[in-house]
Length: 412
Image (cartoon, rainbow, N blue to C red; front, side, top):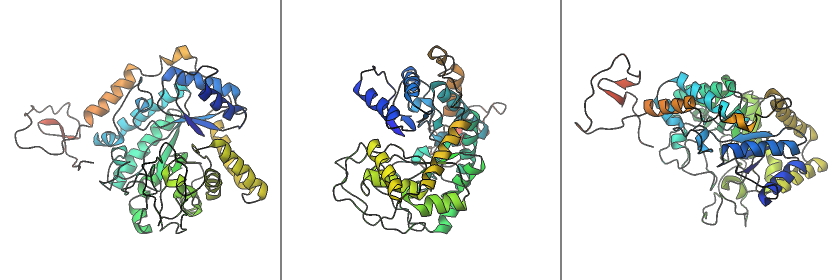
């Protein structure tokens, strides 16, 4: 699966031609859209589908609603604000609205919910993307989001397995090490993932995280790693004492997720262009190791052609059993069938305006924003008193202040 922006592309646009060739000649299985516009993305989905031998699996990161990737649509608050409302039904309704918008644009996979527990205030990459710091409560909102997304017709994806919350390193730039024992992982990090799986989540995204308690295999360090949009020239600190990241670890992806947690759905990697992997493995080697570990979808390798060639070579040489490749392909095809992609007709462009960015969707996001307001601290007398309105007060408010939550939270 490769990444691109869903903006206007002429038929002879070089970026469009490269993407079209990857679909028609290399046979990539899907696309993930980043900062995009709605109609142009839908149009590109139509055009690329016409060039594909098999239906494409189309994805987007929509953790905070459609506006997270489509600024022309509804921009909503983060997961932490959703949890601050205290309303699981609202969380599910919000997720369903996101899913319905996604399907209108031709998107089938939403890379959400974030199932990480926000238990490290120095975390530079998760923080408000998490539903909070209490594992069971996070799990409840993860489950509600899974139900909403999948009832709306998309694939929900739990991320970032086995848990990116308690790190002070951004895996886009370097490999975080989660130096926790198994008992702690079971008690905290894995709790929301189990809740999401119990709710029926059909895909999981593995993280570029070193977890020595789960896999102690040392990770190599490349002498001259390639530079990507995440692993840039200003990144000078490379983790030298880490172990195999979860993305490439049989101990984490197969033993823990597949066997112990009995998950047989799709496993996506996080972006393979991130520093947590490119500093340690060449593109082709990393792609092969994803499949060896038990993953199914290699997301955004720095060079898709190199990744494909390496997988073919590994199967031809006997290093990668063809049965393992067949297993991954079967999972992808089964999910495409479950999503109805072999019989789906794309929504005509003129009908999208009736399905995406509607007043009802905006009202849902506004409700989350309003009810998620949380008072962290107040000097006496700073805020005015408001007469009690017991009949209309949210369950999460306290006497006199509709915005004053009983939930105590520290600033991220």
